[in-house]
Structures are given as structure tokens and as C-alpha cells.
Length: 162
Image 1 (cartoon, helix red, strand yellow):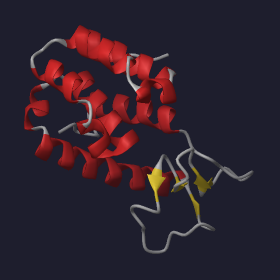
Image 2 (image 1 turned 30 degrees about the vertical axis):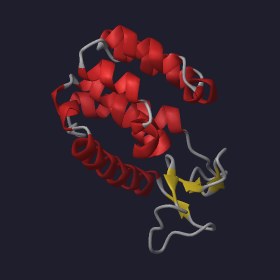
Image 3 (image 1 turned 135 degrees about the horizontal axis):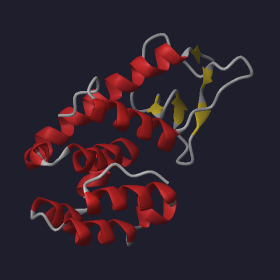
């Protein structure tokens, strides 16, 4: 699991925030919106339809601190699921583990688990092949630059940005 207070954890959170983006009102507060998949979303990609939060509704506005806390809770939940379903992922270096966590956050753990060949290559240490496989997916066509960045990160084991 990635320690979100470590240097790698901060790099992951910054990358994830950039990838997820956020909708804000004129005062800078986070506001709810419908993501491209149609889910009611707030903060940095928190799906309110799938994961309702007491006290947060379509009309809610969040401060940056509230959005950051919600993001940390979401990341923790996905990391626990990832570690349960892919226990070998904990042995990856932080940038590669972060790729899997980022993908799970983006498409859900079930979506990530659909990358059977890619996951097999990662488990076997075939990172360049895994990175290439990521780019051949329907997901890559949907998220474009995010996929390019994460593929590069998987291939090199170094934090990447676009």
C-alpha cells in the first residue's frame, strides 16, 4: 500500500488530482457534476452514485480540504481492494503500484481486473509489454493522455507526466 504522506504518496495524489480534475464554482469550491459515464461526481472523481456520502448531495459544495479528505478515503478504499485482489502488486515499486491504483480509481477494480494479459505481464515483470498493452485498450482511447503517461510510468518505473 502506498503511504499517502510519503514523497511517492504525494506524487501519486498530485498525479491523480491532475488526471481526475475537478469542477468548481466561481468561489473555487468543488461542485457536483455528471462525469462522462453519467455518474454524479464531486471533488476529485468521487462517484456519489456508487458511494454516497451522508451530508453530500448534488447541490453540495466542498472546500479543497473536504475534497482532499474524500480523495484520501477513496484512495484508501481502492488500495485495500487492490491489495486484496492482486496481493503481488504490493511488491511493485511505488510508481508501478501507483499505475494500478490510478487505473482502479479511474475505472473501478473490476475494470482493472479486466486487463488480464496486462496484469499477467506486470506480475511477470514484463513492464514494457504491459505498458504497450495498456495503450492498445479501449480504456486508452477513452482517457488518451492519462493512458500515455501511465503506460510510460509502467514501462520505466519512474514517475511520468505529460
